[in-house]
Length: 75
Image (cartoon, rainbow, N blue to C red; front, top):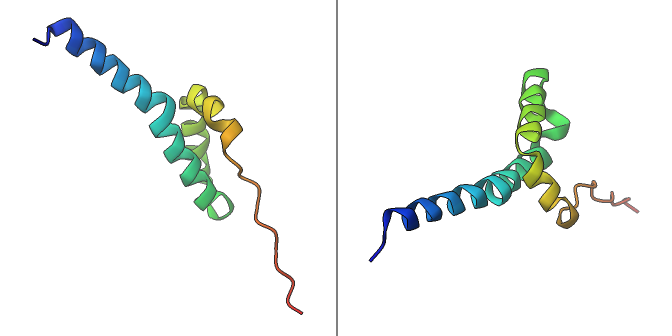
């Protein structure tokens, strides 16, 4: 039998996973796709999202590489 306190604990766990892993991963993906082409308002939104999800961004940062890909030089 599932009690109310168990449901509340599961909801807290789901919110923590979303805040620390899911949303920051989406922000990283968004930043990687739009960083070089963003307008000033969109860049402000990016800065806000990074500020909002700082704990999750710090948690994921050792595993994500945002460096640009090397160019291929045509021969």
